[in-house]
Length: 105
Image (tube, rainbow, N blue to C red):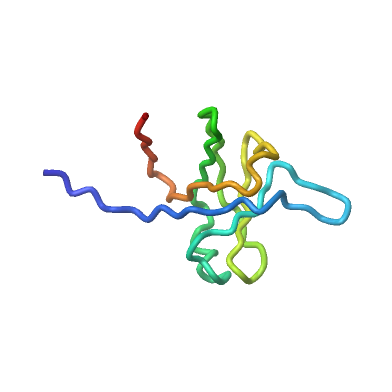
């Protein structure tokens, strides 16, 4: 009998790339996390991993690096930049050291 602890896995929505008036950072995206409504809750997620899977099965791995604003939006940095088609799509947010397993259909 294994007693694996249940870990919290959040879902989030990719809002867009982090950008300023003259510069757009394609390796950093803004994510609105479901259930997180302020910056204090969002700051607990710094260091957590982010996973985006597209329709072809490609996986993009990233990490939450900072909080953006006061409403719980976080900044995630990706090693392989997210494609533009990821904007408006869902991502998985999970603690460091946890591996997500997906069932094949």
